[in-house]
Image 1 (cartoon, rainbow, N blue to C red):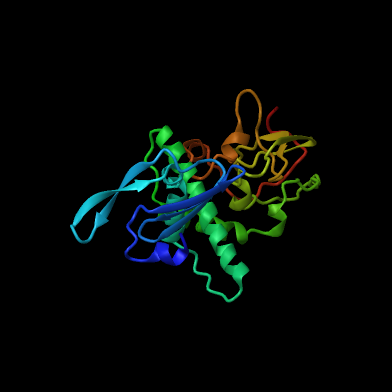
Image 2 (tube, rainbow, N blue to C red):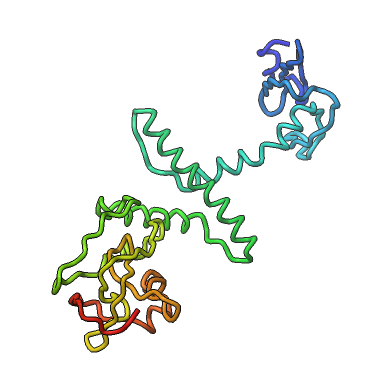
Length: 260
């Protein structure tokens, strides 16, 4: 059957025409419009029925449906859902250059796929997942914050540590580095004892030989206290609030105020 005959209004819905060769099926099926399918997996039989709305009788009627269409519809749910999610909040990238539009589509596709995985894990943990819109806003907020960080903070390899001179003051690292858990914050042993940046105060100074390899500050770390963990726990941590120390710089000295 030719394409013009298949598209005629007089051709009833459910009409099909097909040809197969060497295990490959080429089929045309009349639904609302002509549907053309090329498949090497499914065939025409067994024929089944599908319900479609009839404008003349204003009722749903049954039309014949080949097996390849049934299998196609059964596996198209994921594609339809992906198309819906990517078009809900599209990235506004209007350009005559086709690759610019493709770049915006890739961003939307990756974001929607990440949200589907996040929603699955949240449901498994019996938590209420956030909507897709809020999820995209959180990603954009993090991206803006990450972009504004200094270039030296984007490297995962720590810089070589230089021991401070006697009387030299050091400042606390920025929060972007201190609470960045993508960096590998690890205790590092040094020969000189230095003032703990977390728990030391002007009247109560504690000095140790352990520093953070990324933040470059000394921290109390032994079996009785773990300032290393508290220092990187975040500003909302209850532990940090209970042991909060003054953010002012502390002078390094060779005299020991307490034994490690």
